[in-house]
Length: 418
Image (cartoon, rainbow, N blue to C red; front, side, top):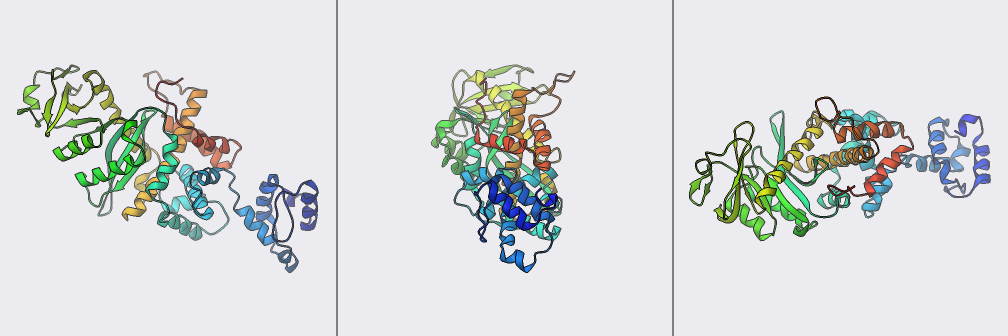
């Protein structure tokens, strides 16, 4: 740091002027961008300004230094969202970095990890302003997430995650894309009640994503037994979305109950109808298997029999995502946020932090594969693998930090790609 070398402010100004004229303050002093890190240190070490210092514009220089983001995340956000204010983008970057370091959504846990020397109360207000910012809506999250999708057809998964805070039931309906064994959420909605979603909300969520990701990119939509019904099935058919949806065993298929018609199916056996049948008024293929626990699994689908069961197993990827966002990861349940719009913004910020870890983990695994333990499973998940590297870089603002965040400019590889 220049100030740490014992130089006066005028000597510092003379020195940087002699090295290059790249950066100007209102006083006329110019500083090369390579000295911005020194200016940050100067901001933390300088004594209270005298009248001469104020006239020379040192206050302007200090403010510019405070806006410098050593992680580079602000610039990446600005490239995707150029119409948003710089202070909004910086708040988003600061909160995302705090989520990565703190691994908690509790405001009081996030505040100490925000940059700057302001009080904890001021930092808490900064977190709150970020969650109250109406500029951060559905379109903004999609602008940030869609460029990460791999090329080709995509497997979409629909599911809910819910938890309780006091007497409040917090319930999120999430639709995302399967990537690297996880589901990357693309659109989500805070439900105004606990329990299952209704058809109108599902239709609104799917239509919202179809407005940005056309149906020709959707290989299939996978969902559990909650997402059934004649109107729902018909809606997906009209929107040209292929379906792979689990149905209840008491569902009638051409007038016969599934559990009665397929009662003789054995564990590990997969059977299907010779011809398509009417399921909830829609002509579909029915594929039935029995799980290792003995449960009958019946799927209504538009796909060939031999693809259906393998694709339906991809539904578990969204459970892995929810697990890594809750108690095993970023502490989604730690938040006291109950207002639906703010809860949706919090989830969006959490997804940005989470996908940074996933993207870094995938890249790290390509360089150095995750070790396999004796029981045959990986020593840690891809998200955890990425977090291990990213948290050190963010916490200490190492040179690798910008390298890691620059990976957000590269889409994930298609499944099976080298």
